[in-house]
Image 1 (cartoon, helix red, strand yellow):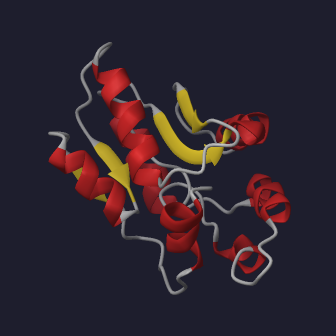
Image 2 (image 1 turned 30 degrees about the horizontal axis):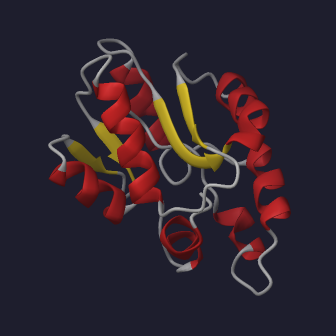
Length: 154
């Protein structure tokens, strides 16, 4: 299970839209289609796909599914199921993602969750999942953490 923002996609170019008040969520998500690839994350995904089925677990809302699928395809990420946050669901990322993980675990084993959000990893580890912190995108602004845990929107 791979997160997208901060793991595969470099979102820093669009954090400016949510670093101020009022936050411009439409502009933030509209910019997702232009995210640069985080090469360390891409290599991790491609290597994992040689021995495992790769699945994507993102806090992005369902309304950006087509842009997200297009971005994954255009950037030659391995094919895999894409799990997203329901539109209008503003729970913290840790809550949303843990729910997805628990539901999916009923269908198939989950060997590893890779995410950049320490709160998500703490919750997943506490529920018995093996986790890896993706620390390759600098988190030099609190805007992403606020969006994931405070606003419940990515």
